[in-house]
Amino acid sequence: MSGAARLLVLLAAVTSNLVASVAQAEASASDSHARDFDFAFGTWKTHIKRLLHPLSGSSEWVEYDGTHVIDKVWDGRANLGVLDASGTAGHVEALSLRLYNPASKQWNVSYANPREGKLGGTVTGAFDGGDGTFYGADTLDGRPIYVRERYAALGPDTRRLEVAYSADGGKTWETNWIMTDTKDAAAAQSSTIGTHDGSRDFDFEIGRWKTSVKRLAKPLTGATTWISYEGTTTVRPIWNGRANLVELEADGPNGHFRGLNLRLYDPVAKQWSLTFANAASGVLNTPAIGAFENGRGEFYDQESLDGHAILVRFVISNVTNDACHFEQSFSADGGKTWETNWIAQDTRSGA
Image 1 (tube, rainbow, N blue to C red):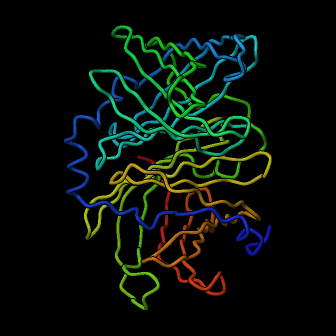
Image 2 (image 1 turned 180 degrees about the horizontal axis):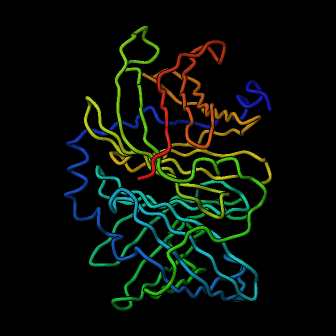
Image 3 (image 1 turned 60 degrees about the vertical axis):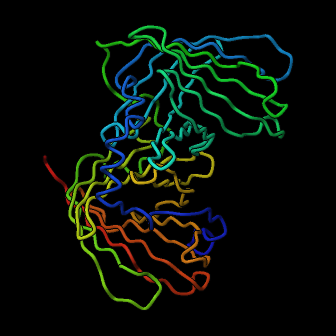
């Protein structure tokens, strides 16, 4: 697919707000609610009961058993959960990305599965006295619904998650998902479960890298001042390579920042979605969409800069076993011209 064709499928927002100040990071670290999910890290045995046809009057439930692996991100201010379970109704694979927003003191929880390779279904909420409640809006069979999730402690090593839907604006709720997790201290802490579906585009990047970043201070203003940062990038595989999580940590003149990039492969569209977030806001940006061709990856989205609509292009190039190059560019004229504003060079680190 050409770059011009990809522009037709732009979504929104990439990494322009990646930088977080030291003060913001320290405020997040000192916030007790930023540790709400500390209980969850590790490997759990999981038992799931799922209502097969929610909000239809059906009472047919199916059950699954499997594992739920939850890994710490940003020292606990985010985490990644990977669910793998099987039962009479088949096999379930899913991931959950949880991000803490220090401004609202709430968590944003988003979901994806390998069949679609898209992140969505976000719910927002917080914990009170060890129990967490989260709400979001979604659609079911084309009609709008509300979603409610409740976490409850059943003991020191057991937790339950219940999901319920409402079709009447929250007046009544129907529970459709009951997941009971029991801590499994002896289980292997692996989040690479699953069968590969043919896309290995990002296999080259799995591991740890030294990262050098140059950022244009004021994009699309005619300014030529660049700011440099040095840090590390760590890339971990999910679903045997069909997804991956990138963690970037670096220091520069503006202080310390942390960012992440969750990449999901869509086997139907044969494209990747790249979704970015930073530790200062704990909010996911709408993903950039694209693919690799001849070893070069191009991804596009649409966002605003100083109140003006712009296009964003993210390019991955010069890929070898020990190095890769990243560039972000903005366009204010519909893609006719581009100005590069972010350059990162990664080299393999043995540390």
